[in-house]
Length: 363
Image (cartoon, rainbow, N blue to C red; front, top):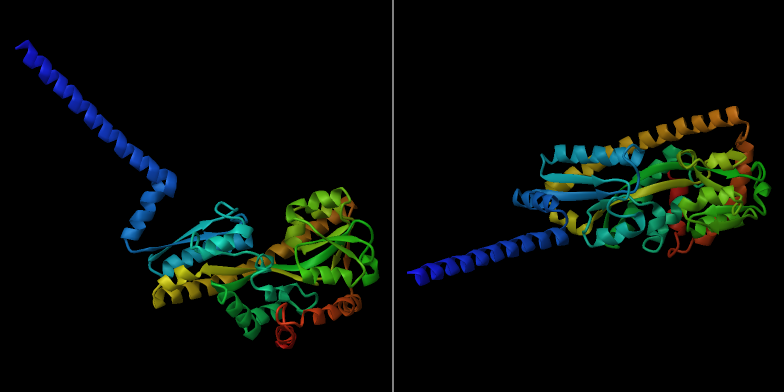
């Protein structure tokens, strides 16, 4: 009898260990899913949405939520979810949580993320014609710029982007750029001669500064403040909002209000995602983007104006910065000095004469 009892106990222990082993294998399987696809919470959420028949749209950008771009992305999220009746779930990831601008275009092509809003410079090797917006003094004012973007020239540029495997939705503003220097006031083109100016990667900007005898220096945006502070560069060009938020005014003695160039962004979508949407949801995306663009332009204008006022206040109270509001005659002298570079980009492989003339002639 004791032998039978011992046999039963042994069998029970073996079976128990087997069940425990199976449980471990299940847990390992769950852990593997979590490691591969993201957190378990995110995985369940995405699966639930897929089961509900909803489309998940991940929108990546590199700035904070309280910027014009960040606010416009959140507006787009709310508007599209409203228009689609919740059929599209927009998930906005600000501040480079998913990708930086350099990597996001590849991610868009792979449909790893569905929307992004990089600066024009990130398209340099893909659609060099977007350098149209770098040409100095090409746009009479912000209204002229928006008309160019919203009519034939803007449509042609978006078509070029689409031909490269993206869906170009719309243009968003940072705003117009000003010139600053630590050496001397930039009142006339000759004042820039011999000075070292930071530029982002752009053949147009390189030609622009060479046209006035300056030395353009390519430098990452993150290094501009220290470059100015240490005298590696003498000056830079940027929008009021960038000059203020990065505190470039602290390490410059002169700021000339030139509005000579434009800094902006292109909102793009994954072609695979766009083509997966039925026509009614595509129309919802287009409408939501139209409304978001209108908001973004207003917010960008307001921010540039308010932050320029803060720069002016700093100049008055510190006595360390002189702001020079150039006269129409002084602006014309700058325009005359740099506009001859347009012809260097008449080749269609660069920008193209038809696009340049089209922008100039847009009313």
